Image 1 (cartoon, rainbow, N blue to C red):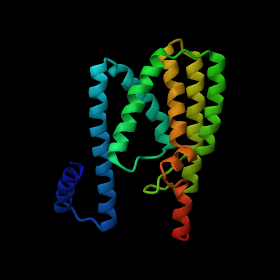
Image 2: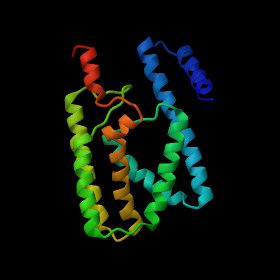
Image 3: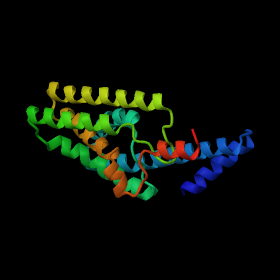
Image 4: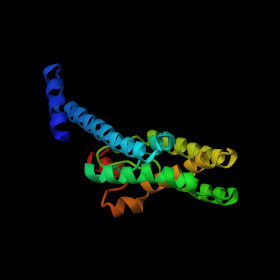
Length: 202
């Protein structure tokens, strides 16, 4: 289904514009990403609605994507793997956040560990989208670290157990998504910008 939809959109784009092969490849990559995102969200929201937790899922998605947007992380190589893993994360995490109770002292300890982890491993790129520019990598590293610090302080200060947990759990999930170990488990290359620079003699 993805191929059919993307192919039809690509044909429309080719008929109404003049693009070279590199630009067309970039457009196709973007369309495939949009298709996967929307189809994944439909499944997740439908399941969340059936479970009566759609508000919680939306809140967690918003919080998680703030840290995801700057620290990046791995992408599944197959759409079905992405769908299953995303559904588990974005349905399971809000449920855990709803019932989990963590003492503020323990939350601070966990938070400090996660901040260090985010600082050490972000941004984590992919082989399709290596972050080549050194200034951009440093910018995303520092911004991700600042967001992580903010998340931990917000988690400790706010008097709402669900929201408090959302900030910590989102950091935990993202720490896994940028972990070299998790990349290795899924047999995905890490620090892809190094390979890109080496192959292109930059």
